[in-house]
Image: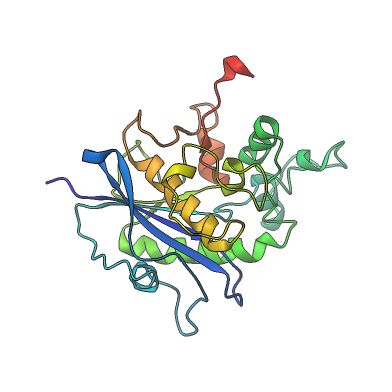
Length: 255
């Protein structure tokens, strides 16, 4: 029996913030379309426990009850890993000495392979989990990723053995890559399937983008959604250690 394909978007806020954007959608294969469950909301974390998947479904009034056959992917806008050089520095492991780089993006303590690739291909620089305030959000996301492992969710590509090997997956995404500016609408093909009446530039708007990324990761290609770039065989070992931002596919022949 084939289950539903569910995308959950989480625009991660800090531990003390009320700006956690949440959104839930479903891919309707027979109609080649997206259905939005409930509403898109901004919320705070619980005070007595970590947020569960059930909490997300309830907060959005999704009305969903997940089954074992449903393919559920969470698109998370927060780093799900740290640069390998930074990890070695913290653990006092031997590594190549780092000196002042010519460009900030080249600092291996600050930026991962995936961050540098994003910068080169899109001329946008992800915030650094080790150097910027986004480190707050990163610890929130990583704490929940560890908790959700008990519910069968695998952090990709860290726990990946083969594509499509799990019905419960967590992926790191970057909403800014499908917008021309912070307060701009999403570009196509996301724009035409976004929920109506969402205020552009808000956490809930970005959460909806995260949910669409999650669907794009889960459904077969080609589809009306984006084709996403996955780590190459050459980059996979490092991506499993540092994490990977699943981003729009870029044809190298056009670069």
